[in-house]
Image 1 (cartoon, helix red, strand yellow):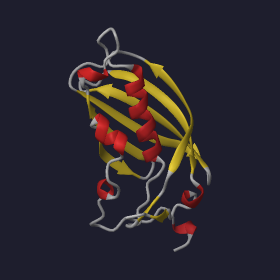
Image 2 (cartoon, one colour):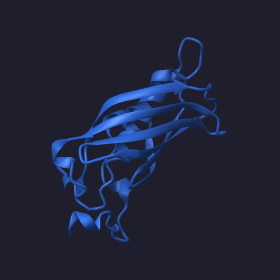
Image 3 (tube, helix red, strand yellow):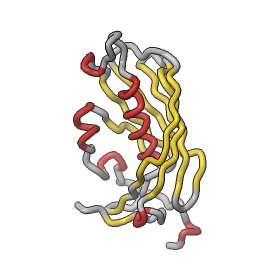
Image 4 (tube, helix red, strand yellow):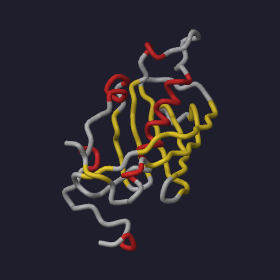
Length: 156
């Protein structure tokens, strides 16, 4: 298959959420990737009181961590079983828009541009009632072996 055939169709039984085990930060924070496809990622995270700032509101760093993580995922989709893409954050600009309340944070990220080495994303975090708590835009760089849409072999 040539790069002109990109993006290929994933095999019908392919489960993108089972491609990679949760990262250590996902396990620590209770983040669960709920949707992942080419150019898009969505995750949920319990809003634990342990993540509050001194005013009892969710700490901004928690929202930023969730947005950064899904921003990376949305650009690293690879439909080939046994292969993956990896990237690192170069920059992220964040705006806090409201206070998240309730038991859950929901983050969504979309790729909005890029090329062979870089991709650009827009992310948002909302609470379970739909209130937007934060938005961000990010710039990510693919790791060298992940620049191809065919990804690299996974270690496992």
